[in-house]
Amino acid sequence: MIGIITYISVLERTKEIGILRSIGASKKDISRVFNAETFIVGLCAGLLGIGVTLLLNIPINIIIKAITDISGLASLPVMGGIILVLISMILTIIAGLIPAKMASKKDPVEALRTE
Image (cartoon, rainbow, N blue to C red; front, side, top):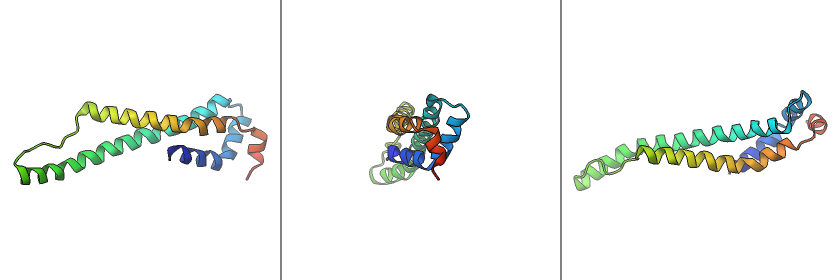
């Protein structure tokens, strides 16, 4: 899904790619723009997932405590949270590599002509 979102972003920002290429941005610079975008999306998605997990731990622990008298059963280890955020970032970067490569290969003249 991240790859599709990045691909749509490439299609919608064709004019921007043409302008960047016409003022001297290299193909690698264009690719970096989209790779940075996917990195930020992956980081935000990972942090959002960790936040939702931590918030859901509260009612889950209350329910488990009421049923079994065991407290603090549901928890997210710090290292586990860090690893999950890293996995999220790696997966989104991998998903964004092909659309970023497609964006870097766009011809600046044709990109400026599209509307």
